[in-house]
Image (cartoon, rainbow, N blue to C red; front, side):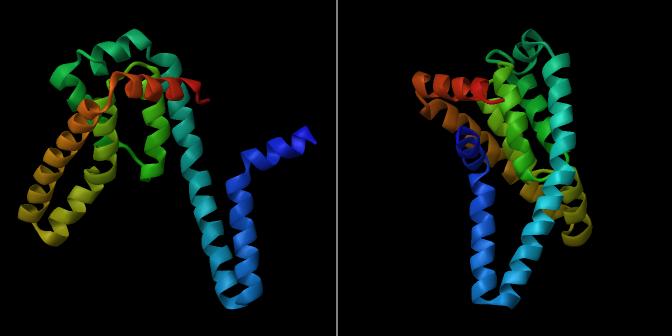
Length: 181
């Protein structure tokens, strides 16, 4: 019985999605089949992306010492930590949901919260292939304007968020990150 409860607890999201797809299929088979097809494609995409990300995270966790991470991305890292976070996010491959496990590892290793937020912001808005596509299809002026505005926006959001959080809230974020497997 405990195994079943643990299974349901662990996979509740997938079970809910399966039930929703079955209901849609029963109500409208055409839409239901399309929904199942989209769900399947999304699941396959995640299976292609998530394993390499977790392998890299495992290597990061083992190879990079906490002291090194604190030195380069911690509380006293300054502009250098911001640049590392920005480059890490901009050069990263994969969709945004892959950034969150990376953020957890960075937090566990002692990275400054604002640097982690900058990495997530850069991951979501300043990817190098996106910039190249924008430059070729919408022009350099558009690409540079959006890039500069993104840099400003990411910095404002990251630093404001860190300043608005109390010490207790920050400690809770770090504690939750350290509890994640």
